[in-house]
Length: 174
Image (cartoon, rainbow, N blue to C red):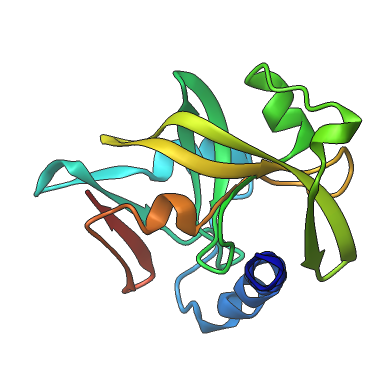
């Protein structure tokens, strides 16, 4: 169990660092400056011609894949992070969902780029991205101030039929 948690922490750290370097691979022009990250995210989800069970998320101007989603019907912004083992919620993101872990709930130790941190494990009943819906997703809540963005990690992505990066887009398919 300890090795799994260590791997999860390392994967989380790598997932925060690697996307920064992916921005250099993008030949597309920058996103318009007048749009906020949340507006770019909400505008960026596209249903594919395959139907409502597939979405396309283009890279933002920094080379990241940001999307808006819903957890149990409540809206939340995410950074798609294939290097994160689980869905990771900021303290504010968790609070907006009604999750308020107590000090004793922070019992999972993760190693990140910023050092070792304790996180509170939880299970999300339903996570939706566009027309894709997945139930019973393992997640962790980070303490206040540790993480600036919610991460849509592999506990969600691995439950999809298929996901891929191609032509500057992330394609998610259920």
